[in-house]
Length: 436
Ligand code: NAP
Image (cartoon, rainbow, N blue to C red):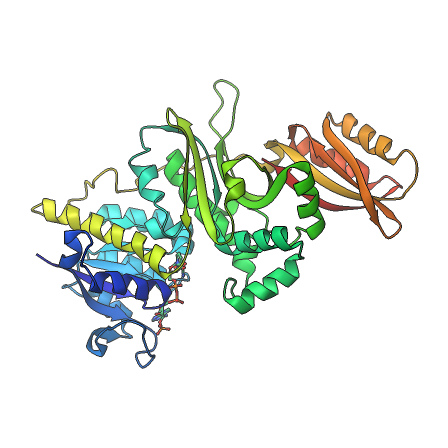
């Protein structure tokens, strides 16, 4: 028995995937039964880094999605369209789908899973979050018995690379970004990575799996790293923290009989140096899961790149092939419950004002007596208690004061900041970060 694969895309991940499929030696025996049947690309004449016969290349991607010979369509195009339409077309023609496309899944999961459930086909997406790190399947299967309390991840390699270099070199964001672009670690248009959009897509997917409900992407708060300064990294270091872009999905504590609420958010965060996520450096990703009864478990590895991402893609193909091999009939609409994503309800996402966390803030103020006292009074008026206040130095004529709070409701903290902004002695709030 062999399974015919229709590959949509032969770029970074498509090439990595083809390389695995074309060299089955030493891998799972089922890899030998996977045949690259057709490959859809934009430009057939482009030189390719993998030995694929020109005969099976086509620019007619729709024909692959509809081809009666194809068993599994593997979407590795990226972007929203034509990826979304081709996935839906493949499903409509009874194909199982594997995709690495977090952007499509985080926006159109509902439409795609409804179509897949109706047709009785599988949609697998291990490569969409964390590249080569197995996290989707563990959340669906091996950790499925747990009540998940929180997922905290470093899920964007570009921003982790930039922050790590800022930390190691004391460099500014803009300089490291420019260098990362030259070295190919950041895109020419870095917005999706550095402003947290990519991480928001990924945490929306993880939250949906971990907490068993659909997530509206527009309700996921995201803030990027472009405002993190070299000064913040240096002060964080002195205070015992490193700054990481964290993607967090967490169950909120609510009063009895109140509906469950989740926090789903992405923002730069001060992470205590002793936390396992603090040592995740460079382009590496890690996802820290807390649940009952598992406790804490961390998944760590390469979050991108041809090989690691293709490892996740081919493992999804294998999963589907092994199920198809063990059932005599193609699956009916009653899908393997652990492979399907059948959530019908939406998770309720709490507004950011309700978040309770510690904050780090850096103020630029006049160098006049009593300023720290004024700040303390403004915080005290809103019930914000301070863990530490340090006058750290000067920027020109202005004094720099860094504050770390105890846990506080974000809404209260922001009210205190509004009062602080109106103080005559305060020039500006140079930065504001949350603390894990
Ligand atoms: P890529 O290198 O840009 O490759 C895209 C491929 O799709 C190319 O082969 C391109 O054809 C083809 N393609 C794109 N649009 C097309 C269209 N309209 N018609 C026909 N062919 C089209 O992308 P990638 O980095 O492999 O990423 C693929 C997916 O994997 C994305 O969803 C991405 O988010 C995800 N992913 C990537 C990584 C990574 O490390 N790169 C990691 C995790 C997930 P040509 O070759 O002819 O130009």
